[in-house]
Length: 422
Image 1 (cartoon, rainbow, N blue to C red):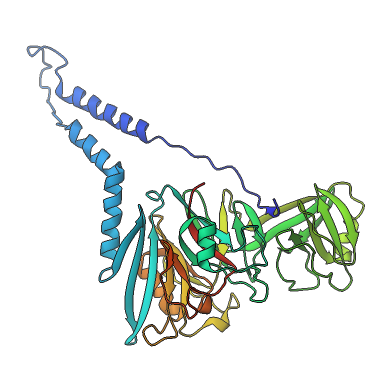
Image 2 (cartoon, rainbow, N blue to C red):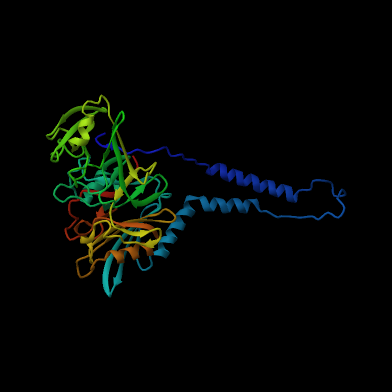
């Protein structure tokens, strides 16, 4: 792979639905036998004994359990939830457990057009939610339209993802796909972790190091622009063929197969199966003569078992409370009413994806605070803002469904997609 492994632990999974039903039926049957069947002949009774009778309709209990667990019942329950949650909206089914909702809401008397997708993963079992790069070759310096990204990933839903550097397309912030870290965090911005059976959201920091024997040095980031000359940054082949220039008094180490294959003060070629570590010579020179080195990559919080991570910012909802930390995440420039993109998840595990049109008479856009209240009203226990403005674009069922300023949406760096499982 051309990216760095994100350290993850083992996740235990247990599935015992059939056994649970069988166990319940056995208990029900046992209770029925113990309390209604005669243990002795009618003429043999204990003196002054009190008789208790509990009538249990085993078939009724079983049918209730079966109805609760049946796919059709779950599907109808989800359908009813969506109808109740989004009144006066146009709702269509994209796939089982996937609803596309169109609505217009009014803020200060002005219209705002909103496209929303809500996904119940327990019903949408043939699909997976994950970030996707614009390049099918995992090249970070790439931009494509959301339609191209969706088609390349066999997706039925796609929403533009995290911020990116306009000149190059390199994502700005944490991006992990299939356990591989493509880019690390900036400014400890909020990110969403996608697990097999849950979502989590937190402000994410880097936790990485390079080791050789007793030598240890912190790695400050992966495939991101340099913030300080003192930082040590690792660049994988997803960055390109060559690492960026070294900082003043800096050097570079090319690593392949856990071995240093080259060192220089000039820019080195990035090995296809490795990376180049760039930083101050005072931190890296000590590794030059090491026969074997090890790179450990992780995050704080330590999301063991995470499959994918996509970042954004700022927070909108945190632990079911409105929480917009725009200044803390150095996002002061994205205030005002604008087109917006956001994601969040509910207490029962549904994912909600939102695209808000703006900068036009028929839809003026939202402030971050308005977006936060909307996400909370939609039931999100945690939610965060994504790249917005001209980047806001949503694709559902083969077409762009919102109205971006540029028809079909501008070319973007990455997206969050609902794609068919391979």
